[in-house]
Length: 300
Image 1 (cartoon, helix red, strand yellow):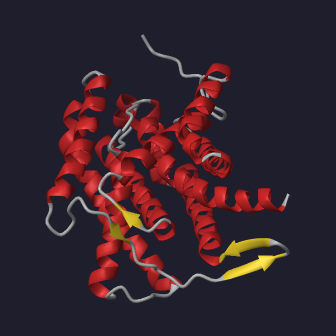
Image 2 (image 1 turned 90 degrees about the vertical axis):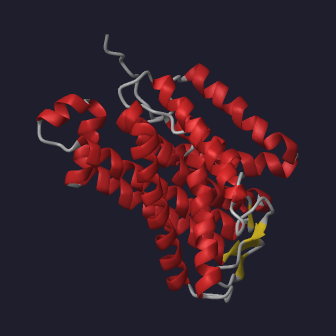
């Protein structure tokens, strides 16, 4: 029982990272019905942005929680602006084309991003070690070991997801997002700036991916230009399991993915990634729209 609880804590921490990344997938899909296959690369950008901010300003010194949070938010802002630029350059011209065109463009953006970062001299193809943003403290409740960093990551992730949910459901911009997701043309006739709404969605999604990248790198401190590919696939699976297009589903799917991966890894690590796809197939067979998703009606 102690081992199960210990693994559950690890799974919640990893799941919170997947959930933040999955929300970006589900928001973009909910607004423009597009699977952004380059979304995982925003995680990589956010991790590298935090790495360079810490390296250049703080010289790899240990920084406190408040400063670490500011660093993460700064990296999220930079990555969010890059996300807006990518949408304007690569996706907006294809908005009224068949959806497969946008998906192919997203794959191209992902490949270009990884190879572009690999070609930059101060990044390059070699892995880098991410500096610790804050001092970790271990404490015990009975035989269960807890890490301060893991607890902070879980709590901050839940707070961020709660704030985002309130933003989408209660604010004017959130209502505009929901309106555009229902009908872009009708929203435009009602005076909603569709382009601004879509850009805001990409900014938020890319920013959340950057935050998840900083959280992930702080726990698993090895940076590579391809790190976003595998993590992006797992987050996409999480979004589909929870019900893509539903923010609550992305949260639920992320936590489920994290817990399953940690539990399976404790038995046989080589199976963890494959089991994710098996679980996805089972969910799609039983409930094609995902755990919290609603059946979609295609207008003809």
